[in-house]
Length: 419
Image 1 (cartoon, rainbow, N blue to C red):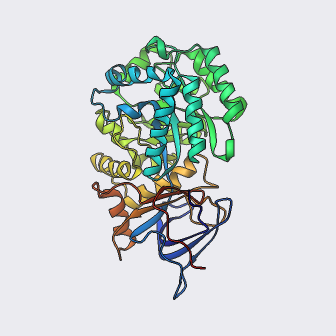
Image 2: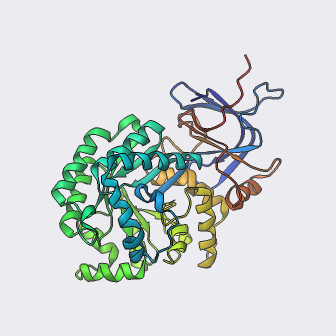
Image 3: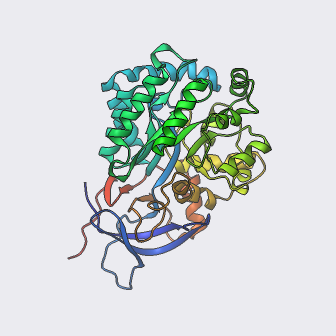
């Protein structure tokens, strides 16, 4: 695969801390041998460096805060709402991941799909099978992607083929930590209790304990569907609310990613903000399963860290651009519009900050990884028009090219540099 030392093009550069973007109409991005940006400058008059991908605009790599590797091949299965959909579409497919060769084939499809759409960091749920999770880590490593992932913890309310005891799950997670955590500064084991319905209190306490001992991130689901809320309340009648289930077991802190968060009370939002837990907003899957619309503007105003998630396979796309458009639509539905520029920032720099990669991702600046996505875009457009074109042209194809740490992982090779 080609390794780049210099890229020329239009940049839509996210601000490091504020939800806004700056257009650089013609810029040079210098990249060192390790795949980090060393300098960004305006192309001088008469510059002899050819535009790397003519007709495109360059943005940093996208961040997908929530998706499911073993649901790749059931993407778009319309058997919802949530709980019946899990039983009908998801659990039978996830049971197939006990076969390592099957998991390896899907892992290759899964990672390739992310790279085509320009995703370079993701928070990923594996299946409950250690071998399948190992296969996913191996493919992420081969592809160069950043990933937070781990086997999905489940010991009840699912088919027997998916259930694992607490001790067995802890031992398998420890083995994954030993083999993969911190590999190439890109891979991190993430403790993944699926949700309170599929994990008893003992299992969730063990999940919190292993996360604390190793300094790991935690990911789970929260408040997606009314039937889910009622079932959870019946399993944990002593809890103050759904969030309280996780709080009481030590699972809510600044390294926690909570997917969906649609039906939260004012008190739950305030507690999320105080604990700095991350919300993964998954509007496309919420529409598809009829779950509802998360109040994104409310979360942002409260200071809750938010990242966007495709939630494949209830989500119908690997494209964070399409998910950003769905987030815009959802914000209109709840009567609190979020500007497109903010959504593109959330899909790039905001997601990197939320998932603990803010020191390496999401900026065109020295010291950051050269994760660059080239996307076809109108010529001579201002920044606002470019953002609209990137998010709302649903007929657009995948990225023209995806560069991960200076290496072209998808798309045509750029022209040679002048000698």
